[in-house]
Amino acid sequence: MKYCIVILIGLLMVSCGKEEQHDFTLNGHVKGLKKGTVYLQKQKDTIMVTLDSIAVNGDSNFVLHSELPEPEVLFLKLDKNDNEDGTIAFFADKGITEISSTLKKFNFDAVVKGSKQQTVLDEYLNMMSNYNDRNLDMIKESLESQKKNDTSKTNALKTEFDNLLKSKYRYTINFAVNHRDSEVSPYLAISEIPNTSISYLQQIYDTLTPHIKSSKYGKQLNDFIKERQEAQDELAKENQD
Image (cartoon, rainbow, N blue to C red):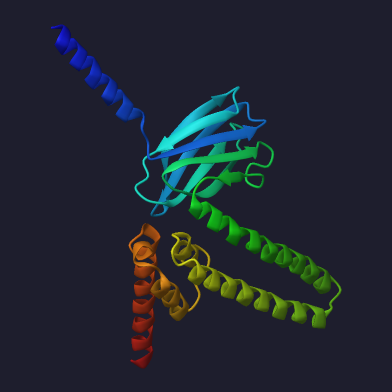
């Protein structure tokens, strides 16, 4: 009987140990957060699915868990119970990711430490911040030139807008090609430049390593290219008729 009890206790300990194991763990800290709810979410089709959540009451530190079959972009959502919320997108992989931010500037003060994919994504986002800053400056300049009826300035800014957008697309394409061994590459193609020409999207896909082609975003990019090509072929057929 004692032997059976020992075995039963051992099985229960193993079972509990398995339940506590997770593919992915998020350790979070939001400075100034006293009360609210944080959600770990993923996007499925067009809706957001909650993977884990926890109510914060006095402690600004929290831990969230989830199963994670492969690297993908997840979202940390904060509901402050005051009709305001914020969301931080990050590239997750198996293991532990740490996210720290502040209550006042939850989206903008976020610092993410974790996956190698996030490191690659951060490199891209840092460069994009320069493009975005210049874009905001040009919007301001354009509004001022329109108030002054400065047509030549307005037209010049429009040309600069177009060139900036082309530069952003070129950088994204080159970045994706140069990081063909990262899941970030097909993700950027889908999320940042879906409207670029099919040939450029195909170029990105063709350079991906076999492992990345078989990843979630690699498959999505391949399907997206096929859909774009089919739509283009159908339109060309209609124009011929």
